[in-house]
Length: 172
Figure 1: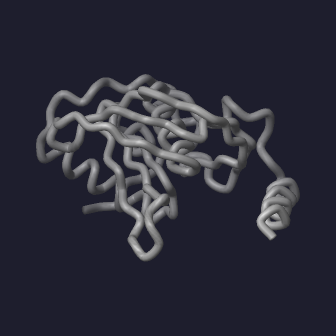
Figure 2: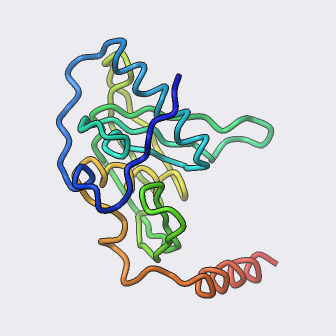
């Protein structure tokens, strides 16, 4: 496995629609492994192939909704599509291609996707909360869209801190 360079906002690759994956081979396996390592090293919860310069419909998402004591796991989605979504969540969203910036974005609170695994087998995956947000965010990248198109403005450090302070108060 190897770390890949994450493209930054402004790179025209991030504005292009990706082509479907048709070859489920060692090159795809290496790409998915590299993407997972790159995402984890960058402390991300998702990464799409165009963010590492590959215009193919492949993403990795960190499943954070796991039973206590179990490790988080990486979900690989090849040629994914959203089948269902419901509910609503609004919160700060960031992106490894826009480091350090966050904006308030509304997303569904529940998302079901259909995708292929690294060997071409179809499966379905469900996500709630952060995982649902990551599914939507990463699939947007496959169509050349970024979260910055969905928020009114980039939050200042003070606005971000005020949001998290209010969240902590609600939990107490």
